[in-house]
Length: 368
Image (cartoon, rainbow, N blue to C red; front, side, top):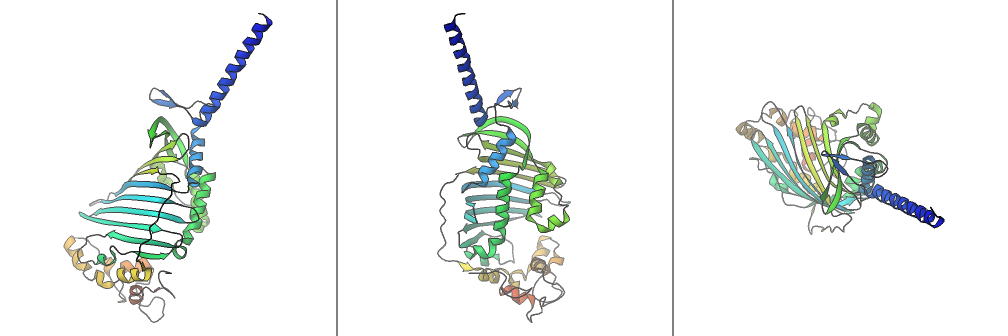
């Protein structure tokens, strides 16, 4: 072989090597899959490992300013008699930075003891105020829940939600640094929302989730015995965009003893501008408490319980005759055997009805 031929030969070899390296790097960052007997093989050093892809997805979603989320699913609790069924549809446009901002609409259907209840509503959260209204209330005879229907109520976002912002910040930081998913199976890629996506079947990483829960709750940290074993029965499927690494879809299924949970979340509209229309008229939370916590709303509850066959006598007892049934004593943490829990001279019932704290000074809700 002549000198010129050797030069040409080695030039071709080097060119082919450069092409192979370039293609490998491209495939490493974009990903590729190979169907093989209905399985998918991840090629080491060529395709991006699933664990890294899922970690990048968590970072992308943690840094996401806004998105559109559609959640739909149900929870079924099997009892000795009739099952309890809760079905949800939630639509949210917005995101969480320093606080929750956006528009949320929800539809809830509850089935229990051959009864069917609907409870729908919407929330509009701005930097200063959070507005909400209930658009559909359970059609229960002898209740007067319609008192709060179709009215906009508002409260200071800072006054009510500030304690939750720190938790949201901690969760987002954990999403950037920890992995909450462990790969079970790589499935064939799919087109979703006009994007080519990875499709992974995964399990929840219980140890990392346990660490997160411990950091969110001081009591959990002290006890250090938070049990997440139920998550071992949780099956999760993820669809992750191959180019942007954003979460496009999540499906989860859980079956354990008498509990069945099934939910789907679709994510679109990444980082699009969200418009929040503030209602022209809204009532402060004091009005909400006065409308909702009136004993007259529940005056005929024993009759309704008798007609419907529901045994709720313990919930409607009022041992101390303070105007609060036991169900509300449990909600507000008041003493069911003491009419004036905080000893301020006013019975618990009248305090709650008028929006005052039955456990101490001030109002139940802090308003603007």
